[in-house]
Length: 330
Image (cartoon, rainbow, N blue to C red):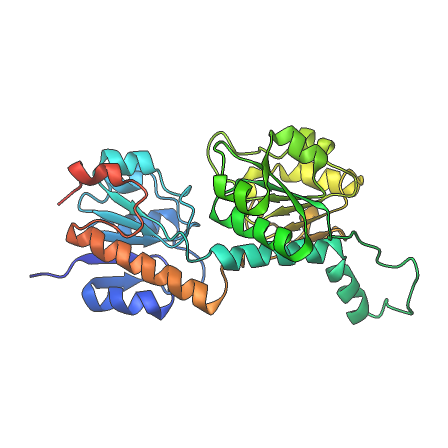
């Protein structure tokens, strides 16, 4: 029996890639940058499976160019790069990698919070570049964490893990905004569910963990930043387009908020001259929230499980569109 043909849009950790290569006739894109859309469309033309990253646009036209495609296994917890509705209509399974990156992302979110609140990065740069001359009583003043209020936008797995860190480590009060109540967060962390405006007005730290959808795009804009405290710190480890980046720059420049910590931007990466990279009160990391050996290996294992199940006609380990089961391609 012929092995299934698959295309992998970037090298992923061996914990998953080795299994894919062993079981499939696999072509792996070796370049450091993602394949251009036209190249990707050509590469999947005769494929049974596709391993994609969040930087790959997987739309209806690409799917139509791949009539044999049975499964798209996204190496990410998010899947806004994939037209899931179009995949479901065409009988294509879609998988993602939730769970594996929860703690690593929450750790990075809190690292950004601490770095922004305590002005760590601009202090380190001053030390390295010779601008640190002496201990200054009024130098590098930041904001305290203990006992303050942490606002979580999106109380899913990562939002909950972030709230745990704030509540357990610094005794923070927790507010959250979500379409659905989270009983566990309320029972274990004393979290209080509020509307978004209330969360923004009352929180000392606001951490964004929402999914990117047509309705959530740009959910943090000038109006929202204007509601926040002038001493507040904003954190985003979710998706860049959730934020109106120009509005965030203006809020940071004018002191509407104290600081920000970002692991994601819009666009990504930003132009080197983008003002978001040159504000002393903004810490920008290059989308590294899941960048630990354990986490990326775990993601690769789930990704491989999804792909191999998809090409074999079996249920996916992490199935974005299980409703496709009755009509999936065979």
